Length: 358
Image 1 (cartoon, rainbow, N blue to C red):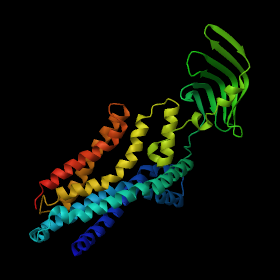
Image 2 (tube, rainbow, N blue to C red; image 1 turned 120 degrees about the vertical axis):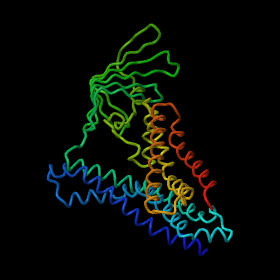
Image 3 (cartoon, rainbow, N blue to C red; image 1 turned 60 degrees about the horizontal axis):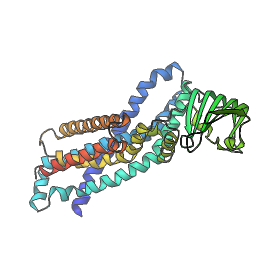
Image 4 (cartoon, rainbow, N blue to C red; image 1 turned 180 degrees about the horizontal axis):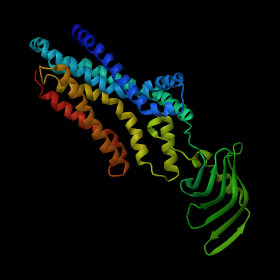
């Protein structure tokens, strides 16, 4: 128990200091990247400070894996350099057993990071983007044009020239309604369609219905049964630029369901969604890596630890970037794109620990 307490006393101060340092660097980088925009738009310092505060949770999420890797690698390497681990190994305690408290802590931190990102990072970063866009006058309109949407398990297709989000209205609308047997179908044209929130469907204006049954074509008023099936919500027709990475798990799942329901490509969104679950376990991987990488040098422990920290992080993120791109373009399943780097580096870490010097 004393060894566990001693290990945590060595680890936690280094981790806290490096987390603060790396977070501060990321905030500073974001500030410098946008500084000329703030000056050009005469943004007051208090507003800029508010943006930096809103960005801090995001930087903590980015910095945690690097800080954990640096702290664990530095502490273990220093213990090697000071010959403290020789005494521990001589007493019959293996490297695996000695490092287990760090691995257990990394799992706890991984679970914490998942909820920290979902409950705090996502809303604060979304608020930061919203406030920054308002300050810089770069808000994007949700109006949309040239829209095609699949609905009702692809039995209904909407085509509209324009969508007005303020009025929740569609203009010059064509709606194709197919039957389950896919033999007969109806085409509805309307000058405009207005969303009726009370009824939960679209109200058509200047509409006419064409019915195709075999070789026979008839036209007339729109069937009430079709009107009641036009339940696709206005959010679907918006000029949505939703990034799954910037919304919480619940909203991301709903957005993916929307993409799948409307027949839009969803591979990239699903891979980013799965990444939300795999990324926090980077904390476990980096500790596992540091256990295997520690003790490689007894000189310049700080520089070697920093070099190994940056090198390992870059390799992991490059591997993840490649697998995510492969998942985006459909070469591998989205689940594999998100989780393959995690399993790969767990295997690499296990090999490094197995052949580490004890």
